[in-house]
Structures are given as structure tokens and as C-alpha cells.
Image (cartoon, rainbow, N blue to C red; front, side, top):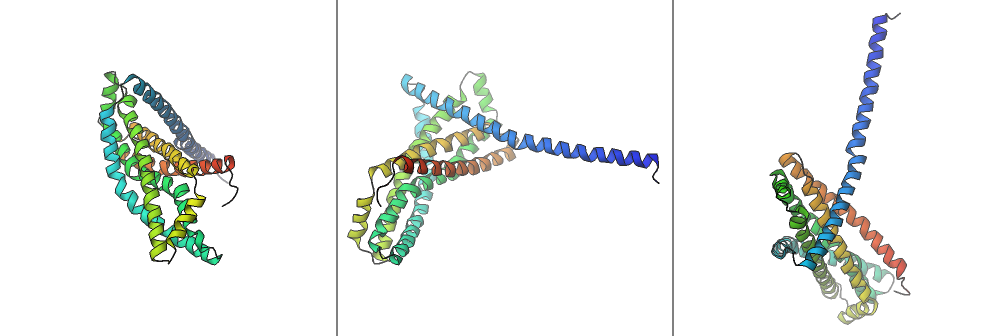
Length: 289
């Protein structure tokens, strides 16, 4: 038989166990679901205010053109070379896969249309956006996170200077501009790589490659790619700026914010890309290849 002291000890231990589980569950809920909702809310507010200030500043002539040019030049210099280096193997890979598939079904003349349309419809905007998130988004988050750690943003707010208007809006506009430019670069480089590989390594006909692509590609495909570029650039800018401005915890917090900004940007870009592609197909269905 157990004594009363042993029973009391077991009861206390059981209560401590339930208390630890309750504390863990409460902490997990606070760290993950609630923190995620708070992050989404902050990013929505930052996005709305950024668009509002962008329109107002452009109409009133208060737009920070010098900061816009500086940030645009920095983003272009950071992302152009990696984007070109990524676009080349993507174009070659698409050319290889579609040429093999076309050869199996006896439609080798359609290799140009397949690879070219794949580059324009999906690869161009998505590749540019991912490189923007990895190269440009990380730089934006690190810059704003460092400013936040040095309390520069707090000092600006104390002096009556809007952080969003002064720091976020120029980066937002520059990211959209660079995203559109990078999408055009990927379209050109990807199509050129597919063409050269198909003609010189797969013994394809140059005229057939270009003719089939021109027959099946439409201006709507390019318009959708540019619309994606605008949306993707805005997403990268908003997510990166919000992560940078909400940085806490010193240098380690800056590193965590950079990592979180890149991961979240890529995940959101993938989801939005699928949504836009499906919406475009539903609204403008294809009557043929």
C-alpha cells in the first residue's frame, strides 16, 4: 500500500505533467498559428499603405526618385547575372524534354512551340521572381533589418518621417520595374537557348522552330507573363520589407528575418503562380494547341 505522502507526490507530478503539456500547447499556438496570422495582417497593412503612398506621391510629386533609381540599379546589378545563368539551363532543359516528347509522338516540328510557350507562360516570370526573392529580397530584408536594429526606423518615426513612404515605397516600385525587366530577359535568353540547342545539337529545323512558335504563341501569353512579373515583384517587396521592419533579436534576428523572407516569398509566389495560371486558362480557354 502506498502512503499518503506517496499519493500526494504522484498527484503533484500528474498536475505538473498536465501543466507542462498545457504550457507547450499554449506556446505552440502563440508561436505558430497566431504569429502567422499576425504576420499576414502586418504584410497586408504594409502592402495597402505602400500602394496608397505610391499613388499619392506620384500624383503630388513627392516620390523618392533618387532612392528609386538607386534601389533599381542595385537590384538589377544583383539579380541580372544570376537570372541569366539560371535561364540558360532552364531553356536547354525544356528543349531537351520537349524534343524527346515530340519525337516519341512523331511531332518533332512542334518542339519550338512547346519549349517557347513553356518559357513565356511559366518559366520566365517564375524564374525571375524566385531570383528576385533569393537575391533582391534577402538584400532588402537585411538592409531594413539592420536599420531596425540600429533604431533608425524609430528615429525616423519620431521625427515625423514615414518609414513606409521613405524606405518601402521606392523599393516596392523598383522591385516591380526590375521584375518586369528580368521577365523580359528570361524570355529572350530562355527562347534563345532553346532555339540554339534544338538547331545545333538536336538537328532541328530553324524555320520550323520559329514558325511553330509564332503560330501558337499569342500576345496574351506575354501580357500574362508581364502581369505575373508585376504581382511577383510586389509580393517580394512587401514580404521582404515587412520582415525587415519587424526584425527583433540583434544580428541573429536579422539572419532569421532574411531566411523567413526568402522562404515565405518563394512559397507565396508558387501559390500565386498556380492561381493566376488556372484563372487565365478558365477565363481564356484554348480552342487548339
